[in-house]
Amino acid sequence: MLTISQELVDQIVAHARADHPDEACGVIAGRNGVPERFIPMENAERSPTFYRFDSLEQLRVWREMDDRDEEPVVIYHSHTATEAYPSRTDISYASEPGAHYVLVSTREEDSVEFRSYRILDGVVSEEEVRFTP
Image (cartoon, rainbow, N blue to C red; front, side):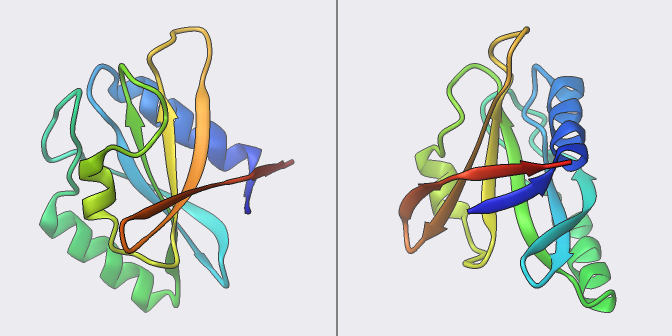
């Protein structure tokens, strides 16, 4: 189960809406599996159907997390025209076994689909999301 503050959820959703029609992406850093710090990242692909972290930005962010004794608790991105479910490409790029993979669908202008998954060895498992104040 992913337990995440409403403030972090709102930041993820705002980033996804701001980058629409392109996919948005980023990380929530934290300690001991607790999501704490919002880190929006640039979609190097600038695409409505695909995302990729810029390699230099990813290196900088991961080093910063190491320096702060943090880990990538949540890796998020948006889908702009489809449901919030990992694509085959998303599954193949999932390389953080301890992370929650959050997908936000911005296909509907007046509603948001926010879902979380664990992705291990190509196997996708949806998990419950608990929102805290």
